[in-house]
Length: 317
Image 1 (tube, helix red, strand yellow):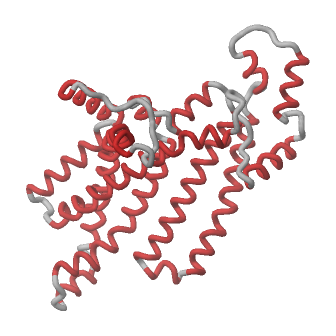
Image 2 (cartoon, rainbow, N blue to C red; image 1 turned 45 degrees about the vertical axis):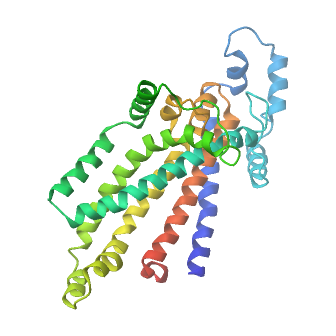
């Protein structure tokens, strides 16, 4: 297991480096001069001397390869540069919003997993019964209803029935748990419902396939208790693709909740993405893309480890 883990860790390094090269090159291949776009976006005139001074300040007068070297070495020590819009360090801008997005993603994942695996298992065990139909309706509705629309409905119901809306100011959970949860539990429910619907459908489908395998029939023929057949043999093997879906959905939640964050007025990573693109803050865009890519790669690494834990054959290949 240790060798398997070390091998997977080594594979993360070239992947991150490839993403860094791709992001850096693509942003600089975009048409237009970033300095002119930034200084002239509101109209008016800027002297050539001011443009040259700004290029020197941003390090854009250096050769292409040297700019990349400065950027990648800064990332290694936690320095993602300075925001072109606010003038603050990028790491501070991201750090002030990452906690909110990460907490919503974790809460939505916990909610989705606690709903999806039991419902998916029950639906597969009682295939074509009324229980199965109810679970499938629940899952299909979750896939059909957009998260931001459900969030709007939640806010309207809270306002109409209780004359109350969630707080607008974010407070870390360790400072005021009640205030924090009263604000973030609602977007977590709105996002977690769709999340659970995807995982429920996947759990049901994979479990139905596993229940048709020969080793399940063999275990039943040997007289193994049905509960042990389901828990030890069926569910454990059926969880492999479910873990993949859960991991990818969790990584997506870090930077993909743009509209949901707008509905609940949350200053998260998704909203920061939109603001930086509209403001042509390329330094921040680079950092955010690298952050999301690092989350996806890290989540894939954790999923690989869970694969090895669920199926020992994987680690020995």
